[in-house]
Image 1 (cartoon, rainbow, N blue to C red):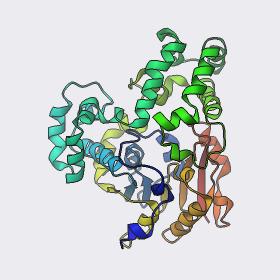
Image 2 (tube, rainbow, N blue to C red):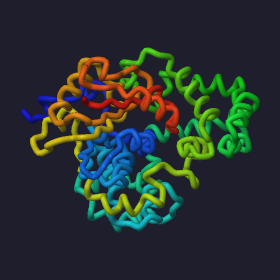
Image 3 (cartoon, helix red, strand yellow):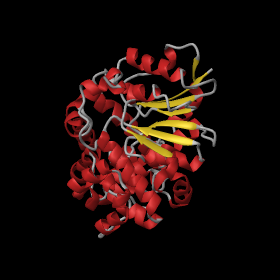
Image 4 (cartoon, rainbow, N blue to C red):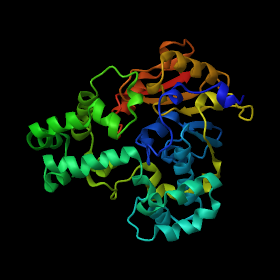
Length: 370
């Protein structure tokens, strides 16, 4: 019996892992990088998801970034992007992954195809439409947002109003816009339907991911969306841009910004991609230490008992000063409630949550081993 069979994540028992769920990372790399304070001595463990946050960490010149994911198709998605950064220039890279418009992605694909692993190459060649459309648009979650932005929102607001949302305003002007123009009856009604547990479970996230959620899903997301539209500068929010327009403009997430490209490219070989669970990874004998952790929102999908089991394993590869960062979207999870040697950096966590442009998360947790 293999190690992976012996130690597996609870979510493997009830969620499917045979599609690209997230074709881009919907977690704000800006606050993640600030939280972890990565330096050149750090070995970082990051949930891979679609790759962007692990790639963003390279800006800080870490020793190594281990990007892991249970879903092998997410690993394929991440590997494709890593190859694009490694072998293409900035314009080509952004075109092939879908950030910029492009009508010759298959020609660009030929430049990197032979540098992909056999599994990734096979997956992409069998699903070549993913490459043609730009891989960041190909996930289940992106399709969910596309339906909302291109089908539902036009039933609520005309194009002028939708674009006005993204214009530069003062805080007072944003509140006035929200209260007088945006927050009408149709907005509240259709939003609550589309972001309900039922619809999101069918079209967006796997319904199994709501197993430990005990809140009104739509009401929570509606409140967080109001926060993003009123308290945060909408003209600088790349996530809002993408949801409303179905594509990016000049406002880009950290990994896509031109000023970061060369630094990422220089460090791209520091990423190690692995298709496995956190539990399995921690038991690897070829990994000596991890000093920074990006755990995405994995605790949302598991019991507190398994969460604590993972943290205990992490202690064996970590030491004093190790930082751990993760998000709560709907479930209330915080490991430091159970461990005296794990400090909850509450003030810093709340400060960064208040800046989080990926506004649907209810909490951002930073913890440190003491």
